[in-house]
Image (cartoon, rainbow, N blue to C red; front, side, top):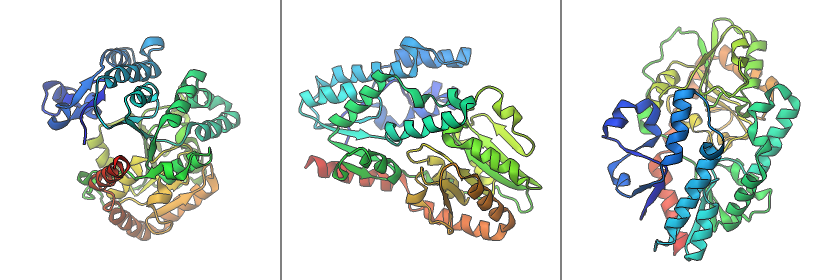
Length: 376
């Protein structure tokens, strides 16, 4: 349905750079048919990424993440004034100027909100920062600048329709008075290439896996606390992803906990395949793609109510759904899986069957159907 696609920069899947730097660029490698429609605004994003790659730190000012989003949004807005399309589909933090320009051109504005609305997210993270002052610097969304909040408000106000991937995100909008008829929930999909369980060996130590941003927003500190208190024998907790805790925090987690920095998506599959259980204790989420990925590899999942867990999981059948911050419940369910290995494997088989229902083809079909309905 796309006339044009705007992004900061992208590479063809068969390009030399894509092959040379796959680990760094895999999220920016697109099929040929999309590249043909792609228009780029690359300068600020390239400088930002170069600084992170060379100096291992994020720039502030003109080359910060927020500045890249705002600049990109403004560039797309200018281009839209030349367009003759029916609608524009844009994402949180990159839509305020685009939607303003689209309204002038008589275009419909479709908004994709990939995480719960900022007010609820801020409330939870402020509570967390007050409870754990030592983690406050890792909860930056608790104190976002006024100009950024204003942009989020304008995006919601200008949107003709809002697409979300989970009920928890929808509820965060309903709580702010957004009409239910303005919101559509379409759960994400999972790649069929992940459906593989060949790597697991009987007799391996009991392994619990977490993958994602390793930090307090994802509730990892609660998982670490639960694991320490359980003290399970011949068991290991593996945390994979970018470290968002204060410096040195993960160095003091204790025995039986292994931290692994971010790995390419293809490599992550082998970790799914070598685990017994996936735990995703996130406090602020919009979906949690790793939930479906783990399920597709035959892992039962323990997830909180603030994820897509309630939309996907059947509690007690292919995983468990828990309240956020509930260390006692986390301990109970992890220990149950540890003590009931055969039943846990059965739940993993159920999880895989559930994940098979959530294809990307299904996601695209539902999204296209709804957009055509809104444009009719």
